[in-house]
Length: 257
Image (cartoon, rainbow, N blue to C red; front, side, top):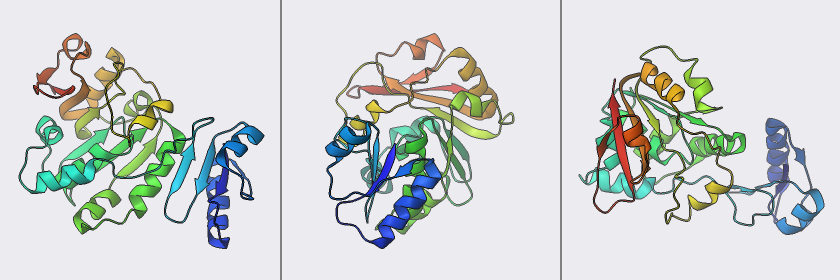
């Protein structure tokens, strides 16, 4: 991957881009008004563009960028604060002061909800298998400015870890988190929001297997929760209690620990 700046740049952006290139072990390239497509053709690598307000990652030959944004979390937070049911929180049963481990962090939408629900005394960690995405989300959670200070504080409390969730689960002590959560990329295609769809191009495909699930059960004090397509065989295969929703294309299932 190469790191460069937005087309209209300044010295601050250039220094930020150089710093990020060092963090990620990548080469910094001067933009020189070249298009992302031209950079693809010249370097045959992913391109990370550092702008004033956001960092845009273009996986090789894909012109739809990936960048951090709270995605659907904003709408979900509003509805939840207005007293509407939030299916994710219904499945996890998260309360003030509880701990939550998100094994498939992505853009952290669920972890933001978890951090809000568990509050200042809670603990929320998220594992992301893709190094660049983990970096962008970690930076985004630390810097995103929200109109709602409670949401902003919730974002700041989330700890991002990079690695394979099975490897990291094996390093954790028994009963170290109240809830362990999996939201794998569905094997069955469904219509997705524009914010999530580009992630399919770079998602680390880690199948939820028996060994990983056993580790999750060991680490979880209360529940292991799985979000998957409503046709997924994993719910029955591993004995999850499924919370079915008539019009939803995905369901939540849980195992009591």
